[in-house]
Length: 197
Image 1 (cartoon, rainbow, N blue to C red):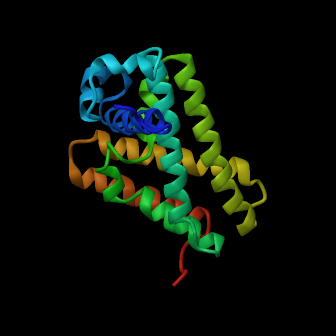
Image 2 (cartoon, helix red, strand yellow; image 1 turned 90 degrees about the horizontal axis):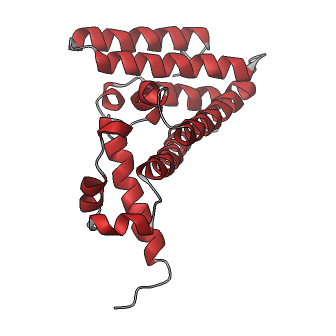
């Protein structure tokens, strides 16, 4: 059976989608190539037609995660008013829905700790993804009128990521909810995102 020219590309995209979910949920060290291939409807033997190694899969899956994150950012922050757009993104990021979506949410809180000890290639891709998000947030802050949008964006992202990571790590749901609510109130006040109704 002959496949179309884009079959290999579509197959690779399917594998990367499954790998991204698994890596978010289990971390890079917790994934198995055979399980990812099976979830993508493929055999383990086909893995090397797409990737040189598990590290190469992880690095490529990070690109997929950050591409997804960019699309989510653009969807959440599509409002023409930059203040409203940024508030919408903060509301989503610090929601219980995002907290509970470990396998679909932002890669930053899911993988920061794992990648600090990880492969240099994956860490470089992670850094590129972070820089992209920082640029998108900084642009909104620049449009709002913040004097130092890049540094402010880095601070805002660090608080978002830290809050979600901590909210996911604690066992007590009330404590988890309080972490999200506290970070949300702090960011809204600090960046002037309140009272936009």
